[in-house]
Length: 67
Image 1 (cartoon, helix red, strand yellow):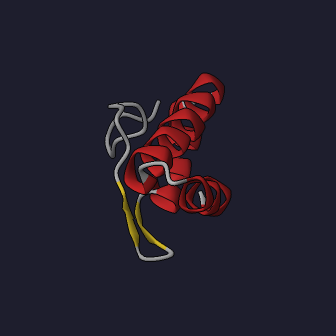
Image 2: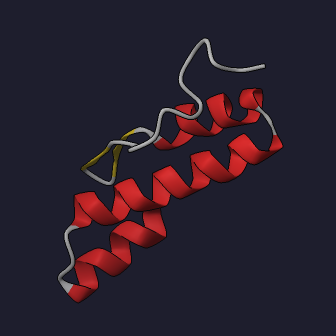
């Protein structure tokens, strides 16, 4: 997340969109391993990081979906 946010700031990209894309990718990749992994990754990447609100754009890893 921090890398995506830093690069977005440096290049003038939309910081929230870059953070959301990075979070979504991380959660979905963890979901390939298992539902519990996706939940744990979601908990760690969603929220406010470096002053940027990070919102995942996936249903994978929501509480109660772990297998």
